[in-house]
Image 1 (tube, rainbow, N blue to C red):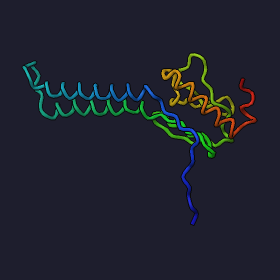
Image 2 (tube, helix red, strand yellow; image 1 turned 135 degrees about the horizontal axis):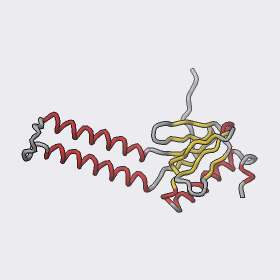
Image 3 (cartoon, rainbow, N blue to C red; image 1 turned 180 degrees about the horizontal axis):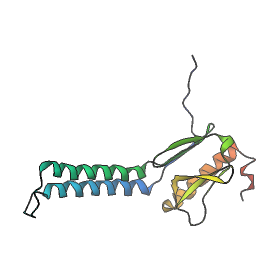
Image 4 (tube, one colour; image 1 turned 90 degrees about the horizontal axis):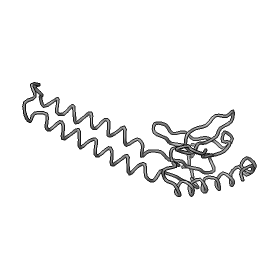
Length: 157
């Protein structure tokens, strides 16, 4: 039998402010839908609402709040196996042979992982809204890049 080992990560980065806003917005959206659903039967508007209409309004709020919570999901991991990027919907592990660099372009909202042939993957875990935390995260990630790919990242100032 082959033994599978859990990957070891030197650096793990998550956004700081975005999850706070995402969870707050999700709670507000859910509360608003529940309240509106509850208030549907109060007063006469000329439309006859039933209990399942109230439940449906609340369920729509649950779905929207669940989608908003996806913004708290991004994560970046760097280790000997490569670079693992998790954004809103996907997770992907890039081996070091496929990674060129990590960069944060002027005016960008988040960093990006540069791949061969001018391709890139957004890294939503490092966001400009986090300011100094984003700078520290980029420093940690670049130090890990220098450890695993010193020849590729030597062109950086």
